[in-house]
Length: 296
Image 1: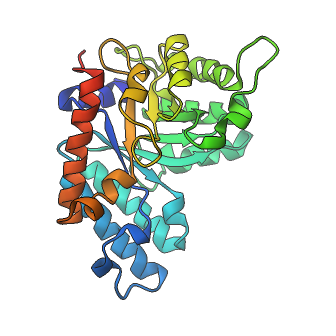
Image 2 (image 1 turned 60 degrees about the horizontal axis):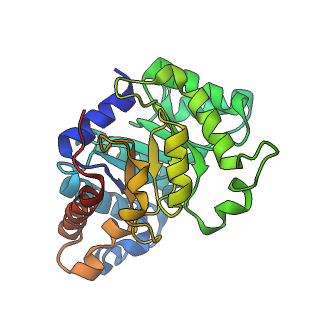
């Protein structure tokens, strides 16, 4: 069974397409957890403790987490070890793990990146990796090949949630399509051999909630493309804006929320992990009010 089918099975079972973004910045931690941590090793240890408690608080109600690698790489070897420990712990708790690394390069180097995160020698448990497809097919094929071999998945940047994404992604080509639509076509092609029982491929797309018209166009044009949807919450996206990311069965994507979960305690009070859990429950209800029930 392709990895995308396993993820969708979990989404349907939980009736929840929420993905918790563990884009954990040290300043997100409560003050008492930050006290006395001055070097990279101490900071990384506190971040792992925070992540572990967040995971424990949400693992029975959400299907997946997304871990932004840059938040960990900035702390050197200790930070990378924290990323790996976080990924492994999330996997042990039954969550699907998306490594948000936006990796790519040409030829052999792309293959090295693929092996590092998705290959047999990968140093931690990752199910999906975000990639930048703008180097073209020879920069993506090594990732696709590893996905086929090891039952892994990808999310390629197509229409991102940042405000300036249109400077490049919305440019018109000679045939009238936009760059993001052209990229969507490539993603659909790259993933055609990894389509599962739900009609979605393990090679999906990053499509921001903050661009609902573009997301709706991509959903209509590329029915096999599963979305990783950032931008909900702190970036300005809401449930109504992403309604058309989903098909008639309520399927089609996972919706990431990072700050809205990790920093929920700052608005709600209580412990950070209890506040994170309640934020996920509220998000599930919000999404369900728009998407409706998810079915096979």
